[in-house]
Image 1 (cartoon, rainbow, N blue to C red):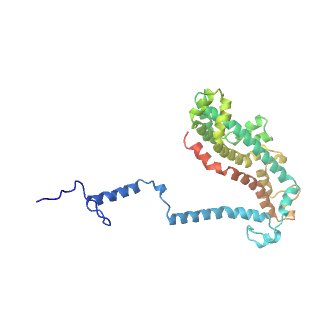
Image 2 (cartoon, one colour):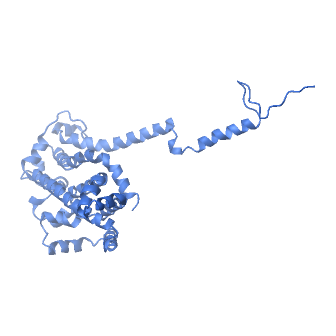
Length: 327
């Protein structure tokens, strides 16, 4: 009898039927392996996770926004609003600018504000100039003594000389009761120096070598190659320095004796916490409520530095991570 030849390979399953036997066993692990190879952070978040994040973010925003809005609202509040309220006034029913007229009439707050702005701008520029020069020099391994200078800078992060030695040094240098005493003692931050040096070391050496082949010197390489690639980390360091100089309260308290040279943080402490006279007008004798005057001084001291952050916000995360990941 004639018999049909058997097919050489396995018979494919008919349409609409599931594979049987070994074929079905092999198909399941393949799908599982594909899912297991996917990183966990690429998985879409669950609805409960998204809701928890939204709730946490809302709570944080409320905690931060309530005091700020309360301070701003109280600064515009009238005596009637202060009496009716048991604390901060979020939305005054009778808004007035009398508190701001009071603090700017005597000229003390306005002069202190100009002093803080000048110290912040000039101090930040000087600190950036020195920090960039030191960081670039310490990032070049061919510079003699760079390791010793780096260890010296790191030593200052661990050991602080203290208040009395700093005061004696400032006094001996003739910096007492001068604006230089607010800048020179904090001219270079060791943390900012290390962050910037780490960023410079991570730049590709090929770019620097190509610039040297074209005949560029170290100064031209720094200005034309290194700094244009360092905008993010420079923006972050600028913000750190600006906040430090703007909040220079303790140095002003130690080194400045003339009240006309006081920056805004020292004026804030003297005329808000201690309630002393404000340009010849006592806070208690002002036509504006004392609490409104205090909040107005606080707004003047806080808002200017807050206005700078939105312009640097896009560089903040990138600059911190890029400069501090490795070094």
